[in-house]
Image (cartoon, rainbow, N blue to C red; front, side, top):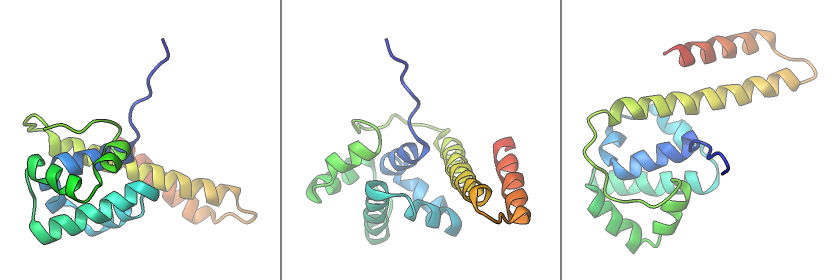
Length: 141
């Protein structure tokens, strides 16, 4: 039986925001920018979700589910969130879990930037070291 990899942080972030739209109110500007920079379908769904939540405010899953179906985005939402979307059970730890997922997204972004710097012909070692410190701090949190 093959090992199943854990869902990617971007899948988890999208899933959590779709199922717990109240999390949207806690997203700071930098995190919002990071979410909008998600590639392809992930970014497309984040943009739709933001428009929906700005226009209508946070909504329970049942309301958002209908909106996704009416916008013909339910298949996309399930695809980018890693599987079927169903009503979430109450979760008192969802805010903490979301912060953990966002830290993982930041670590991924910073590692990619550090990797680009390391592979450049004339690496900016000051920036590279700063990125490594940021990654270490985020992983320690």
